[in-house]
Amino acid sequence: MADTSDRTAQAKTEAALRHYQERKRYTDWVAKMSPELRAYHDHEWGVPVHDDQKLFELLSLEIFQAGLNWELVLHKRAAFNNAFHHFDIQQVAAMHEQDVEALLKRADIIRNRMKIEATITNARAILKIQANYGSLNDYLWAFVDGKPLVNRPKSLTEIPTKSALSVKIAKDMKKHGFAFVGPVIVYNYLQGAGLIDDHIVLED
Image (cartoon, rainbow, N blue to C red; front, side, top):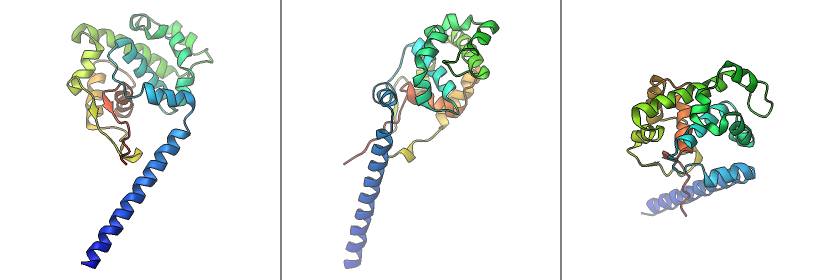
């Protein structure tokens, strides 16, 4: 009986220690955020988005941050909005090679030809989505039956980089003409647009 009690007490102690370590790891991670990134995390990330223009902006920013980091993209967000007509879908869809060349000369955005061209390609794909599904919003949210998937992860390590859902959506988006939409980028996109809620839950 004593051995069982000791093992139970030890298990509780170890669980409490793991919880403390996870809480500290998370609070340290948050503390290292810039004010800009913290504001995005607290007020935008994971909040459901239903506006097509906003959904287009978030997809484009996710693509530009691939291989880089969100802090850099957020720092250049205003410049991206200026460069891409505030992500007006029709205006971006109408951009051509001379526009790409002009953007490649701008020092205030991320000058990556593939990502710039993907943004224009995706605007054109969205116009087709709107024609076939009514809106980008209707197309995307149908994958989650119109409501966010709430995962309630308890630590950073429980948040995946992709999922079966992001693989499925990435495949379907490519079929509809989208570019630069691999499963990892799509998972990040679903998080940012609020289709997946991966906000960490630190229980007391």
